[in-house]
Image (cartoon, rainbow, N blue to C red; front, side):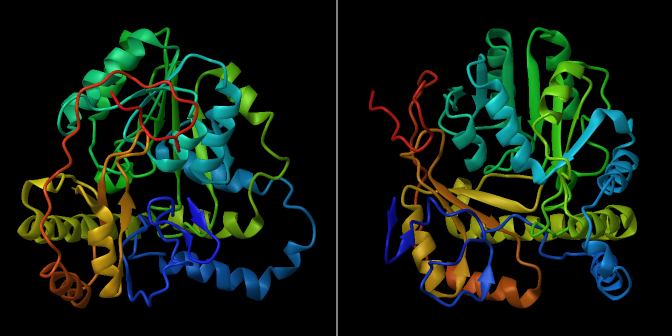
Length: 379
């Protein structure tokens, strides 16, 4: 709900949206973009463009997106004709939701806010155990793929950070050929190299990815959809504009993709920082912290607003989630600090945050509500 004076609540704000906090934030741990980016090579590409190629901004960028597609095809080691590019994963989620509206779609939850909003018509498969796990997510995936024509999930999951092995997902894709699996791989490279399902020998698979989060350039809007399903590829392509990316997005994102040395050195560091973050959070919240292998951690809390409010008083922003909203689970998501000073600031703030137990969630059946923003029904 939005108040005209105070703006949207923490729960409805996206990560990184600090426009209505009312406090001075010195450490933003609410957004999931790589805080060690962008690569200097990407910054230099933008400088060089402004210096030497600025006149190219005049005409439309005819064919320029092919540069980005070629770079991403090389990055994933896939055939370029199986790729489409657009304004990040979000645009493809929007287009897929429009195309599949009225189809038999399932969504493995909890899930990325925008995905749940766009696929509010889908059957949601929430955890039926007290807390989620990779094994429980895989169990629900098999249930959903056996019953529905399309299934959507993120891997690693947003917001919990849980990762399902690529081999397990591919086995499910082959087991249920009548169902198409749509996988949002926005955070896969934080988990480790070479884990993408793109290029797999399967026609009932769609992979979404972007350069935004991995390379710390979410301000650019550039991403891809990969699929060997020719009909679905064509249907989404027809809804893309003639110039799917701006020339500046192409310049920055392609330079980032080409800088594999930066990715090889930076991503392991951010994983180490996140392990340190997990240890720090466990000192205050114990087993409420969800173990993960990527760059953020989720903490199950009954009153996430209380913790977020306290941290904001110390100049730290985190992402909050209200478990009363369909498809969500109550808690906070915290991005890894990037320096010793940032860790010290967070450690000092956490010392005074009241410890909270995890929200108890009862088992239930998939809820067929109309909108993700509706409260979950009371059983």
